[in-house]
Length: 197
Picture 1 (tube, helix red, strand yellow):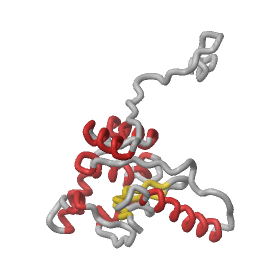
Picture 2 (cartoon, helix red, strand yellow; picture 1 turned 180 degrees about the horizontal axis):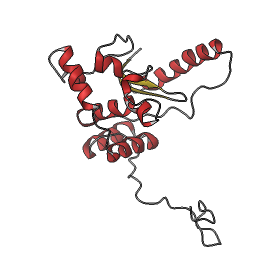
Picture 3 (cartoon, rainbow, N blue to C red; picture 1 turned 180 degrees about the vertical axis):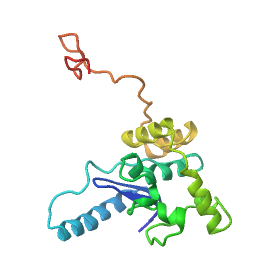
Picture 4 (cartoon, rainbow, N blue to C red; picture 1 turned 60 degrees about the horizontal axis):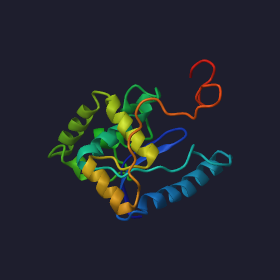
């Protein structure tokens, strides 16, 4: 429906997707459709009602050359960071098995950067598994989380400026240090308790 899914993980209360879209509305429409179909299926199957995932849909444009494979690792390592499994291949609801072992997955469309990892399927899978031998560094995790939380593009300065200009989104600067809280009459910030946090 206008979006190619390159990576995914279904967690217990949220889903991560890495998609390429032909239109700017594509990801939002994909999430709307997923919400309707999947949530209805789960609610019927498990005789429940209400929403399935926490929070609202969030997205960030990603500069493919510098961040695509980093974001793919971020997504597929989510169950490992959540201490649900020791290895991403142990988690059932992820695209990792498709990329690392060639398991059939009709949801996934391989991205050109994934395909460039090797000339053969075996070479790509081996190179992909090698990417997962180490965890993502804290700076990469922080960059991805901040971009998603703020709805900002993820990429170099030139990319961020171009995407913000094209979409009319105001570019935000990363937050540094402790968040500023409003000072109340007691001399403490509003978000502080008596214990200093």
